[in-house]
Length: 75
Image 1 (tube, helix red, strand yellow):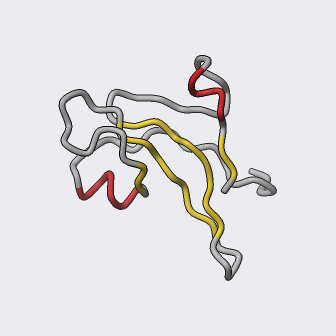
Image 2: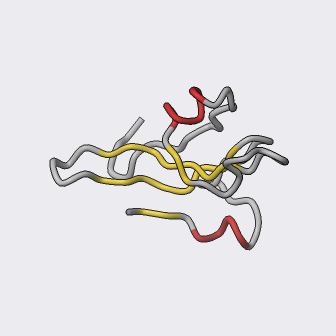
């Protein structure tokens, strides 16, 4: 998994925050596909601290933060 450890030392251009979640990095599957991972930061949310996908955030009615492009992808 590719992660951005700067989340603990402050905001960075690769870490996007909102009130509900913070982007943590990209997970790559054995088949080579990748998907974004987020940690829930919403105050008083029962899943606070859990690392989840964007689909899970939406299912929990939480906002998906801006997500940087996948490593190696050019926009």
